[in-house]
Amino acid sequence: MAYSNVGIANMALQRIGARSSITTFNDGSPNAIRVNAVWEYIRDEVIEAIKPKFATVRVALAQSAVSPANTDVWDYAYPLPSDYLCLADDNKDDNAVWPDDVAPYVIETLSDGTLCLMTNYDSTTADYQIYLTYIRKVADPAKYTPSFINAFVFRLGAELSFSVPESGGKFEAMMTLYERAKKRAMGFSRAQDYLEDENGSTSWENAR
Image 1 (cartoon, rainbow, N blue to C red):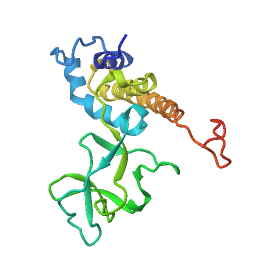
Image 2 (cartoon, rainbow, N blue to C red):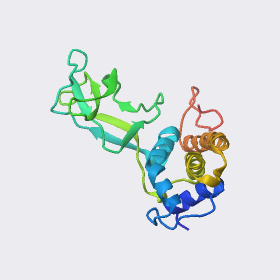
Image 3 (cartoon, rainbow, N blue to C red):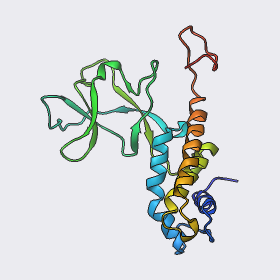
Image 4 (cartoon, one colour):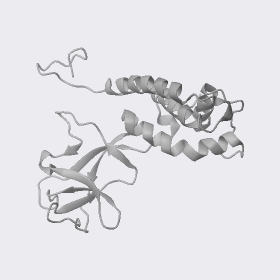
């Protein structure tokens, strides 16, 4: 059975003891309205916290024609993708921002509100483009992993516990379970990396 947003929402409602499920996000029921009000906010929060592999993507950045407002500090701006949530985790072999010459850099907005990577690195004259590995918004539940869904359901349940009458103040319990599920999901995600330790071993027992 394919994962669905409605199925995820109903799992969250079930875990906090809601008396009724939803058929669609727009079925007009009180619980559908409650889910709709917080869905995207909580989904993106959990993706940002876990940084799952299904949300990790690498892209080349193009330099903006608009200069940073604080040109005394940064010379160039590189707009970030519209689905950007946060940088992926760095590691010694694969930095979130490449090449190393891009550093130092900051993530700030231009005067027009565009979120950008600010740096003194000029990709138009340098040998390499700037590549960014980042965590993006993912709305398709078919891409979610079971461990991510479990964490998402607990976090969504915690948020819904404020508005679902039958929840009986289950916020703290849901958040405790969410923290446990989040760590497990992060572990599953990181286990997919292929890393070498300081001795050149590729054993997962030694890699760090």
